[in-house]
Image (cartoon, rainbow, N blue to C red):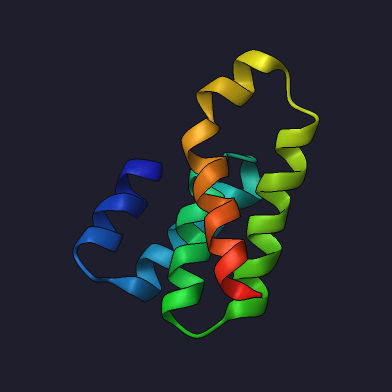
Length: 87
């Protein structure tokens, strides 16, 4: 599902991509999916929804085990950078 969502995003099919990302984030708490969904929200001027997703990523990272934090480091940094831009 994430591959399909990324493909839809790359093709510029924002509504379909957003729905697919929502399905992914409803079922799982992947930082990668949440950050990419937040980026779509930002491109549609929905900063409150984006902020919520990004805060979830940062909050989840604080309690994650070290191997998980290492794996998701790129997405957490991206989330923090996007949050700084929203303030």
